[in-house]
Image (cartoon, rainbow, N blue to C red):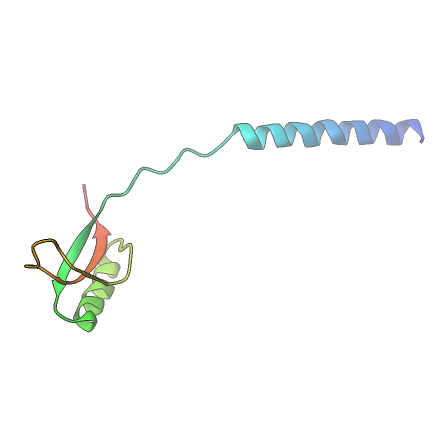
Length: 86
C-alpha cells in the first residue's frame, strides 16, 4: 500500500474514532418534564373530542379522550390529558 494512502486511512480512522467518542460523550440534556393533568368529565366521547381538539389549538394536549372509571364512581366519564401551565 502506498505511503500517502496509508496516511490518509490512518487520519480517517483517527477522525472516525474521535467523532464516535464525541457523539457518545455529548448527549443532549433531557427536556424538562412537562406536567399534564386530566381535563374533562364529558358525558360523550364526541363532546370530549371536540373540546380536546379546541384545547390543542391553545396548548399542548398529550392524548386522546379516554373513559375513566374513578374510585368513587361520581365523576366517571370521558377525559383527556392536557399541559398544566406554570
